[in-house]
Length: 132
Ligand code: MN
Image (cartoon, rainbow, N blue to C red; front, side, top):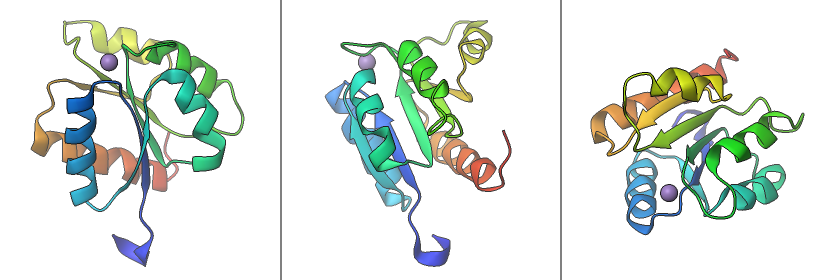
């Protein structure tokens, strides 16, 4: 990574296998990974952890990813952090619905490793350039 500063990605995911896979892929790419196991856990930790990007599973215990995203986006401290939905639903029309809920992007599971890495790099770059 440039400037020796690792970009931080918060992975909000409850499935142990998905957690391990996502963390491994992104760590190899040079990102610092922060793990949260639920929407409420993500909200609790957001101010202290200040991630550059959030990957949000939709089906989560305690609080689902859509509710958590709405709360995060209504908070001045973290509304500028891009939140990308990570979800198994890949039916036609889902992406539009998900973006309408306030997410900045959408990645469908199961993830394609190469495409996933490209997508994450592109979201991080957009954030660094200050694009919405
Ligand atoms: Mn889940």
